[in-house]
Image 1 (cartoon, rainbow, N blue to C red):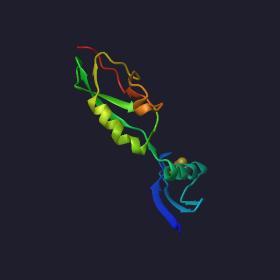
Image 2 (cartoon, rainbow, N blue to C red):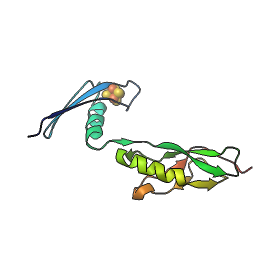
Image 3 (tube, rainbow, N blue to C red):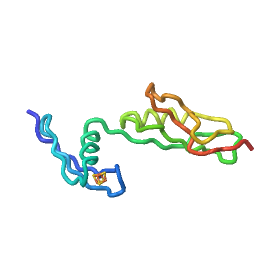
Image 4 (cartoon, rainbow, N blue to C red):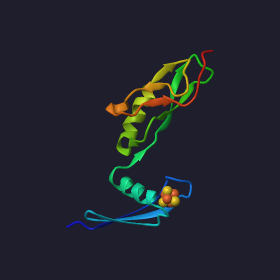
Length: 123
Ligand code: SF4
């Protein structure tokens, strides 16, 4: 027999940061604490298929700094964050790199790229 699942999360869609309570009873969801409809959609998405933007750094050669900040081009499923970080950790690039340049295309066979977050010139 399925019971009621209750989860409390913070909505990150806007800076208000509403504290949401999600109750799932079978296929029925009850969301409370949201000040707008976007919070309702966010809560259900967070329960069914949570995703996160990924930020990290990769090793860069021949640049002023040793690490290049990178970010995902879109949110990744939460369960892929750790495998993605393992791949990013192994990645090395050569300067120059430009902000927005794709460092890893379609990471883990997704449509999400890992992109440079800043320019890094050759030194
Ligand atoms: S529920 Fe609406 S108002 Fe509240 S944090 Fe989410 S988007 Fe902002």
